[in-house]
Length: 474
Ligand code: GLU
Image (tube, rainbow, N blue to C red; front, side, top):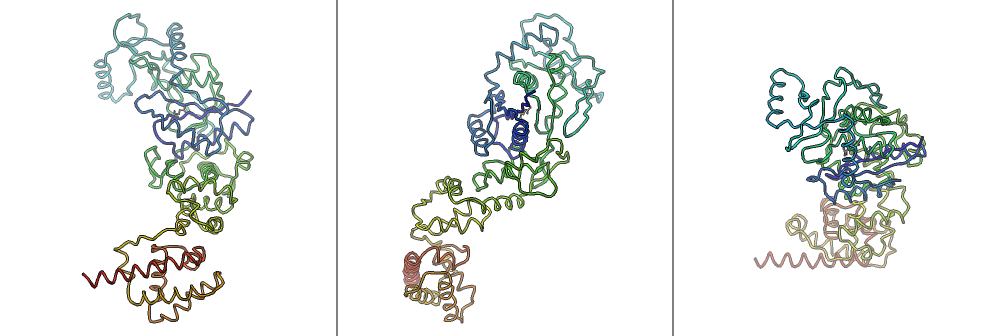
């Protein structure tokens, strides 16, 4: 038997970290067993489906390297197939048309509510042969209500649900569209899916799906429902919570290796190991060892893992990941001549790709636009003198290395020892970079190189003179 798993997202929002876990576990299980991993787009909700979300699914799976062997299959182009089987079910008395009006159903609901009973359809149309010319739904003809549906979930073990609460559920809506539970069964069977791995929010759908499988005499797949993931606020994660969204992780410079490594640990562990490369995952991951208790997102852990992978990346690969972020931030790599030295230095000191890009931005050849409101905190006659002094020293014939730059800063501290040390550092930093926070000042000056540092200080001196003359005039 060939193991076949599937990832079946509904394209109604950007993928979140929970969907990535479903995809990863399904992909891994198929890869571990020389099986096949199938991609199925469940796009039957016309109002909420959006092509941008479909493209996003492809983009993310490719970015993560979760390649699929079959598909993408689109449920929206399989309506004829579903229709044929529904007709077969009607013919074989496995389903029936229900003409009950909304009013009747709503009265039924009210009665159930009054008697605190479960809201299941009372079977009014079950054994009748109507042929009205009015709207109808098609219901599944459930077998004896006294039965229970029992299945062995890989994670939750034996699950028993009374057939009573399922009732004769709808498999085709009044608009002629088949329902989710029906499409999933017909597809899982038609695609020979052996293992259904998905979030535990689908656990309530499984008994209905098993009932359909049984009635059509299809092989029932093995189910594996994954525990819930809670976000940082201990809330159930949803497509709407920004922090779990894959767009957030990509835009903020997380690496695919880091995402996969983080995700695999959401519900599965191997002793105290934290780092899992793809090959190690394939070797060690065990579907039978998934923990059923809910797990929580831990942003700090995620940053730590990202830092680990960032610092172990080779320069060429790193540049491939960095390029789109440079482009997004409209920073030209060519505007920084010693880019490779800068990137190699900062990659071991940062948590995110986007931080590296922000650091590189400090060294772009550009005129600094000072934030006028901030300038007043730094500008003074003493700071003007400090800049003139520093300019003179840095323009002298020195060998450009960190030790000499450090010595020049120390010299300035000594000469201007009547000023607070912190103020000296902060002012130099501000007038050389235009920023209030940067990495170590000597490092910044070192990477900026002599010519650019001199130019920036000269511009700042001019700026301060203009600032003073404006104050005097006004
Ligand atoms: N389309 C469903 C979803 O996105 C998944 C269905 C399934 O895995 O059975 O939640």
